[in-house]
Length: 241
Image (cartoon, one colour):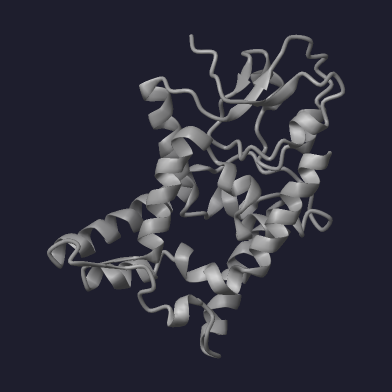
C-alpha cells in the first residue's frame, strides 16, 4: 500500500497547485493563442501528454492530474464505478481539437512560442476575476463525480485523456513496450480488482491475457494492491501476440 500513499500525496500536491497550473490544461486558452498564432503553455502540455503516453500510458491521470486528485477526494460521497459513455469525451475532444486546428490554419500557423501566454507571472489564478473561471472548472469536475461516481469527469468530459489514449494506440500500432499492469497466472476471480478500479476497467477478465490493455487504465495500481494473490504488478514489457 506504500505506493498508494505516495500516489495520493502527489495528487494532493497537484490539487493544491491547481490555481497555478489551471491555464496549462485550458482548452480555451489554446484557442485564444491559436487566433494569434502562438504556441502557448497548454499547447506544449497537450503535446507532452501525447508523446509521454507512448512509454508511460496514462500515468499522469493516476499520479499527477489535479482533476483526478479532486475526484478522489469525493470517493466517500459516491464510490460507484462508471463504466460507459466514453464516446462523450471523444466527441468533445474531436470538436475542440478541430476548432484549435482551424484557428491555427486561419491565422497562418504558429508564429511564436510563449509558454506563459495570457498567464500573469506564470500563475493561472493571479487576479480576482480568474477565480470565477477556477471555480467554474472545479464545479465541472465535481458535479459529474457527485452524481455518477468515481472519476466521472475523466470518463465523460476530460479533453486531456484522448491525447494519452492516442499515444497508447500509437504504442500498440508500433508494437512498442510501455508501462502497464501485468498479470501472472493464478487469478481466483474474486473480483476485488474490479471493485477498486476507479475507471471501471474489467480487470478480472483482462488479467487472463497477461496484461491490462484498456486505454481507460490510469495505472493507479489499486487493482495490484488489492489482489489477494498478488498476481498484478507494474511492468514495462508487453506480451505481444
